[in-house]
Length: 318
Image 1 (cartoon, rainbow, N blue to C red):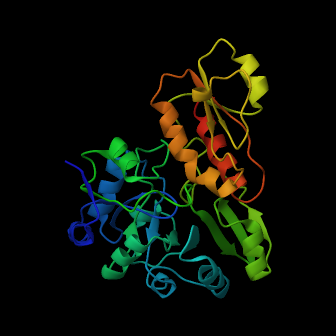
Image 2: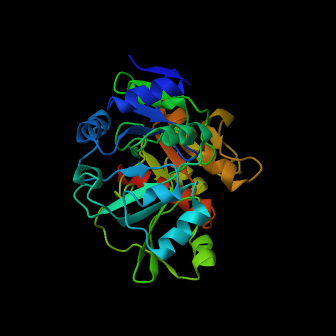
Image 3: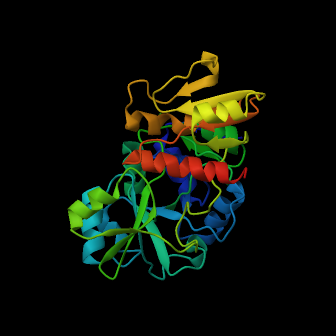
């Protein structure tokens, strides 16, 4: 049976024995195992029902530790020193020590340093990196507290290290340096503008549909309840005969029961909205709504990352 606690030594012992532990980060909770042990990595894919063509992120304690597992060029190191620890992941040429199973056969590995004191202490005590995708069944809404993990992976993970609610609430930005340019593979809390300011280089959105970094599948982060993204008043008229819940940034809408409206940040704070997004999506799924209508968020900073997650959530129902 899965247990929840704050026992770092117990988590350390389990991971050393190639068992699985859910770990807290500032973004979402991760399902962690020894990234250098293929048996542990297989357990991660199996516990999540995750397809093996979808690569994993490895987690390390320091920028210097990255060099044990990947080639770190000067620009990538500049980005790492600016944004790690934090909600930022680099896609780098991998070293042979990283099993192909972790990278889904790619010669690149995604690496990050999480900004959570409990998990950082854990990583500093381990002599191997942790592979850790989000700690939820594949394709479902990512977990932002220990209870979310238990709801989705009870009896599939040995221990949940409880670090409280996640501060950021959406997955990390993923970037890669290629030929003097920065390719943005996944939107997150670290923005293109911030990376450009640090490096002086242009950030270019990824165009190819090849899955060479985590979180790139078109349909992902989906609720069980069908979700539609767009103008809330227009969609409410279209689905007037349905039992509807709405997700909005900071606005309430007339004609809706208050319990059917989920406002992510009444004070219009985009960081607070991101922190609450996945928790609200999960809460709505616990009720018998016919569908969820979500509005588009401001197209800047974390607003772009929220829109990205909502677009992927609705894609599965199209």
